Image (cartoon, rainbow, N blue to C red; front, side, top):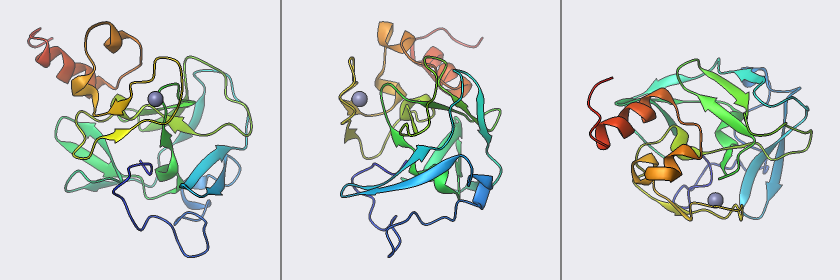
Length: 179
Ligand SMILES: [Zn+2]
């Protein structure tokens, strides 16, 4: 969740991310990538589409939504407390964050290769951003302004995998009632 523009202070003084890669046991999976726009993370491993990337083991419940949190249900969110915080948003992401199973998986759309940027589709967990931001992924079919799943409708809603709580909120929005 680190690409939000109005989010100062997520970098430590030495330019690495704020979290040692030993946190959440990421040392063999992730490397930090420092660049002028901030910090991102890259994969150290190659895995087939849909494979488990890592369980999320160091998260804690968060009292309120903020730039660093990941939404886990209609009214709850977590802090990742690890380098996973530096997964950026992409409209053609390399990873999926499953907030129900509490795992990060390789995208079901494509294999993951060592060196790939580690990204996920933020609206797959987030219903509505307080601070929408322009997506710079330059992928075909980019959503443009990332405002949250609330604003992804119709055919667009079929293009990505969404967490169960987001699917539920979409059904409510679209008037399908309870399932
Ligand atoms: Zn995009």
